[in-house]
Length: 105
Image (cartoon, rainbow, N blue to C red; front, side, top):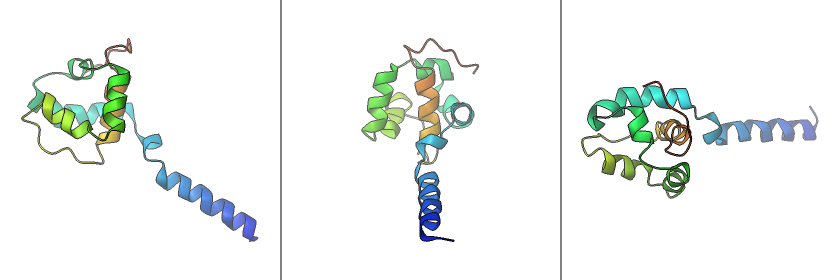
């Protein structure tokens, strides 16, 4: 293999490993919400997601305060695993107050 090919393969591999938000999934976030959030929060996913607009959810996520906001909304919620946050964020962003979308949960 030439040096250029090795470099291109290494760059491609690095990009796939480092792009965690690109691998987040709305449906997976919905499943996580149903398993981990619904009972402690006492509300369904539609009500939870509609507590904020898409811009508000985005600002919370970018500030790294998603878990703190989840605890504020649901005081009975146990610690949210960091690996769940991107998927749950995608779920609440997709079904936020101003999105016009309604989840099936």
